[in-house]
Image (tube, rainbow, N blue to C red; front, top):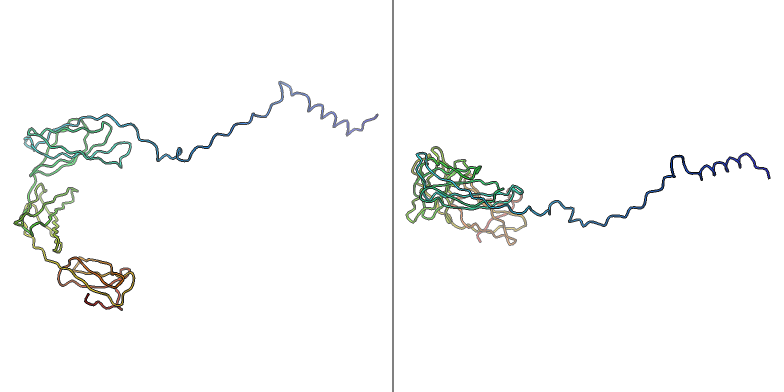
Length: 276
């Protein structure tokens, strides 16, 4: 039996393919890898990681004195505590200084601690606690006193981020101490009276008169959705929504206010305000 040339070439190629390669056996295919089991989605969420174990408490102690070195007995020390692993969390701990001006409180050893210290007649301070022993010195403040309506709340703002607040007594007298010398903004509030705001110099005496206010009611005709009743007195305004039946009521506004009916911040001219 005679072979053709193409047939001989195919036989030779098949024989070569069946022989092992020089230098070792033919490489084999990798073994199949078992698929990893599904991991629940919550285990991959970095936001649900458990917080680290709480750190041990440490003692934060110090003294509160005036500029002459005299202890400020009874000074109020407020600690604002934030853990370093989550600065959004806030805890407050408060303590009073003893007769020697000494205070002590426990805080987590790995926390960021900011101390706010107040004492009668002194300007408050706020400082970051950087050591276990704190030596805090308060400077004397000045006083703004006066009279207003009994029970009114008087607040002072000097741009120092501290709250200065007093409530007028039964005789209407009030006093705000611990202020820095200079200009101060006073805001006086009392239910049944219009709020008063004024500038004063510290130290000084200020008498604040409040204007009584009364209820203001009415009815809008025709009634419609989205209406607001707006009462204005100079730069101060009050807004209440108009009910579905057209009625509205202000709890208290000064006499002589200008009343408008608005929708989406614009006056509405095709309605009439009638008595309730």
